Image (cartoon, rainbow, N blue to C red; front, top):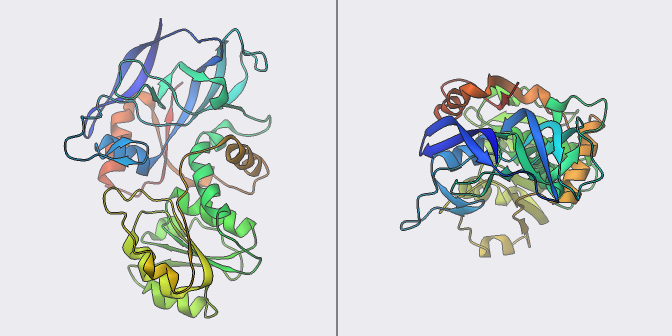
Length: 333
């Protein structure tokens, strides 16, 4: 067994750094010495609050308590040891890793742990010349990529992104890459200012401007796609009337037990609803390539960095929202 350091949620809102014993890498596993891990504020915050029984499964009355757990699913570091069946990596190589073994926890795999024993299928080589920090949140970047790729889009089509968080930004960047005109709706001037839109794009603070009127004035011809990154059925339904016939809705936010939507309301314009989740090799590969090309930008969204021993402080900041916070990095060295 190997001694590992892990960020552990012991109970709702209670986060500590603890030592865990993890097994030696199996034949198809890789052990990674972590350099940076990127917190997924929405998903990990939801797990630490005790709202989920699994990735997209809300906790219901009568379900078991999902603690203790190691939150997270994304990090970068150096290959330290290889399983006997892994022959395409080398010790010392910089890689990205998703979930890794977390014995003794409610979930058998988690993110914030080092050294991290990880399936080879969940490892991506970091191309030379890329700042490892830029890809330390690759799964979450892939969520935004997935959202931006789902709707049918032609150059010049109008697309609205609900939410000014990290997934909102990466969704908007992907839509812009595909040639869409983009409007980002949010509540935070600091976040909205980080979207470097092209001519014709807009950001709207919905605390000061009615979003429906803003969308109608900006896209009188109608919107081709509405991407919800915050998990709000009312926000989606408010914008249904702005969508043109055969438009697309993408919902990536976590709705918990409040995700019901009236399908009949979609029929009037024959709208398509997409519900993306998780990650795949193909999407991760494509996301990594776009980060390497500078098309998907990441590091400008980082607002805070903490040494891993201060992980409790990092999560308290995210959960309390006591100050402007977006990308939060845990540094392990």
